[in-house]
Image (cartoon, rainbow, N blue to C red):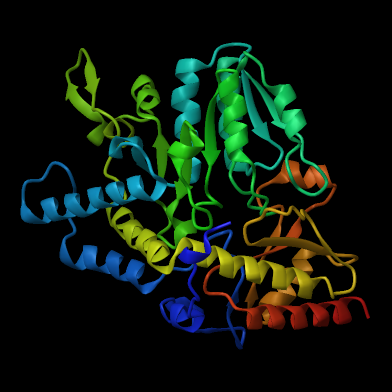
Length: 414
């Protein structure tokens, strides 16, 4: 729990003024946006940063010596320095820019996997994983002859830690799990997971896509080897993100892709590669969005992550209380430790029908398997309705959704 001294009362009305997209009608009704686990909306400071770059100093970075290039390079690298502090990385060189969490995981699976995985080695993931933290490991496991093992999920949506410990051995080379589940909101005990993995000599990648905007992340305290995040789930732009990696591991790993800034010298006989982090940043990066990413992180820090977490927890508990008044509603994944995600089913009504009727009332939620088909298979369901809350959401919006769900039940189960 955050310390009470760091928590302040948020003026949600004032915060909502910073998000232009919220102030519109959808299907004739004021928009209620409860699909934040898919992507957050963007504050004005992020939108303005994108426009400022393209209107004022659009230039390629790192190699130009003219004023615009130097200004763009400085702004780009300022985001890397900010991320070092945001994640509490030891060195700025441990921050690599990516297209997002999925690319960060693919980078580690491909580069670490090709260097360190051999036939018969084992990769441990969990039954809570998003497809993006399953498929990259399947690809490298097939290529290297490695074996994937998955941690069981308990009925309340938490990981079976006894099963996890039973999977670990000297064959385990890497453990890759999410910090928080996108489908259920479960917060995993990643520090314990990391310690157990290190006890057998395995490295650990944490998928931080759903955690970074909600939880304080300290990669040195966690002692994780890799931590992958997406900007767009932290109020930033889509198409960019970052991968933290311990320097000694990054230096030992081969490049992921070729071209651009990852090169030091090239001849037809041999190429030498740039130092980290540039060794892993091939081609012209997503300059404008990386620059705007810093504004998103500043928004989180200035609002106060602890204060955001308290507000979101209040919304989660309020929604849980209100939604359970709906006849036949069942919450899927009811861990005591969750980020602000509420997944549910209503007996006898397909999730898609619920989602469509809510959208008709201006309410945006996600329906389906949420790219976690193995998890849905575990529960024996096709999918859920998922409402996910952010700092700009209100209890009044939850009241409106509760009323809408009552109408859905009345209409589809007369």
